[in-house]
Image (cartoon, rainbow, N blue to C red):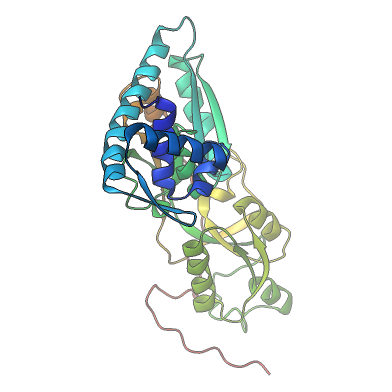
Length: 330
């Protein structure tokens, strides 16, 4: 007999490809996972994984069971979610994972709409990185993840995707620094302002994102030096607000509430917009209260108001344009 508990563990381990990562996804100790996988293999009489140190690769039998387990677990989840409709006065909990900057702008409006239809629904909000949100979805510890589209691997096909909103990347600088006519930050600014513009606040999350930001600074402010590494947009913008440097951030991260912004100026830069999408297991998207929650999120995304963004300064080069080598400073 295969138990649902064993099937959930197998499904998570198969996607995680290691016991260490699966342990994190499920919140269970590695020895317990190993025991359950061993019992499952013993019960069905065949090996499901080829083990190479801590890495696990599915055998042909494992690949077959993975396809079947996705259908079985999806059906069970859908049945359990549907049965909540018959529970007296209870509508269950919707777990949502998102960056703080997304959650604080989208969720209040979505929850207000949601509560008009399902007043007893409870939101369990996890402020996590996009990578962590997707891992928690696979571990069935989240119902919905709100993430940037470029953080989603092409292999994440078991979730339904829905559009939320997009916002431009901007250069955040302290109030009072006028870049509207600056062709060269090193020569066209007073010393104090030049020091601020050449002080880069960069991010330590997401290798691809970090590399993209490094390339942008190198191409547009070649004399810069990194003064701080941060892990949240909020910390970066607080440092900018104090006049300690500049940062390239999505415009919406500068919005603290519906009408309150960080005390910074935002300048347009030549980078593709950040597109925010929602992910939800397909079996939830068809039933209530999840269908109403998706609609509420989509409506909230359509109402997003981007903070005021100033035109692109002259020194910012178009994507693909060559920049002359910076003059050496004696």
